[in-house]
Image (cartoon, rainbow, N blue to C red; front, side, top):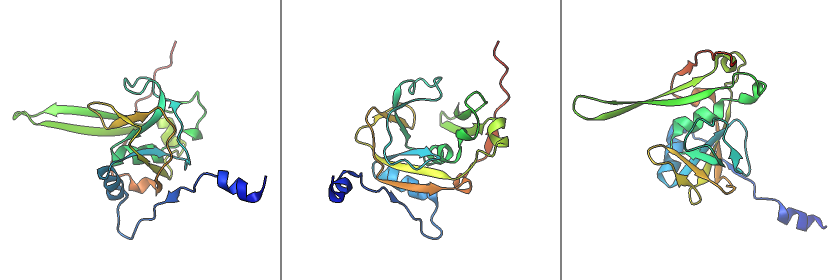
Length: 182
């Protein structure tokens, strides 16, 4: 095969977003969401996101094999900066984003989101830089009542955004130790 034909078969290079001085990653992510994209955070830069089984099978919406994405800058950045690969699979690699909904005396709903990781991940220095992948939304199905969505088809990012732990604007909590299973 000629070199020219080999080059034609290569997928296009994914462009990397370079922020301007003073520009927050949060604002960049929100601009992409506002213009019809969804986000996928990962410690790895991925050229083509392919459907995979979800790691946390306790999620009602996310129990099948798909590409999962969000319409939340915080959730995407959080997922990007936590590298579970620093621990073996049998270790406590839990990562949680949980929401507490409250209704005030006037009927207004307030939702607070908390982000937490296992003590083992914290001790293993799993909080590192990663990538937010900006994905076209056309093949994604929304989860009603949440910022999550999923696609059953492979998805190529429009652009990837490098992120650092300091780009995550919220406190990261430590999950209580799990009791050993009998």
